[in-house]
Image 1 (cartoon, rainbow, N blue to C red):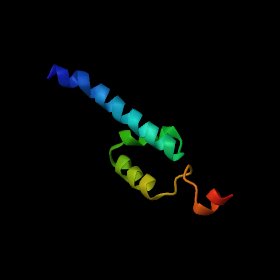
Image 2 (cartoon, rainbow, N blue to C red):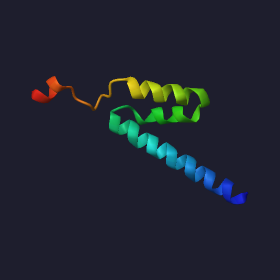
Image 3 (cartoon, helix red, strand yellow):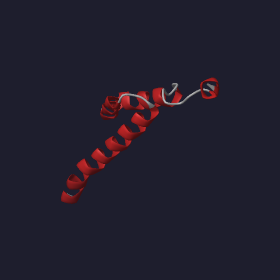
Length: 65
């Protein structure tokens, strides 16, 4: 049981770091990663990020310029 409590912060930190990297690559502010810590907000924010337009993605018309 002691191993669980030792590895839990490492796992949580790793998941937050992964979320930070994904959100930064999408072009959003990395502070949105903290939304993953709030139980209901995390599910809502995952859906918001999944279906919103990502700032780092260019449209076809922007690529032709």
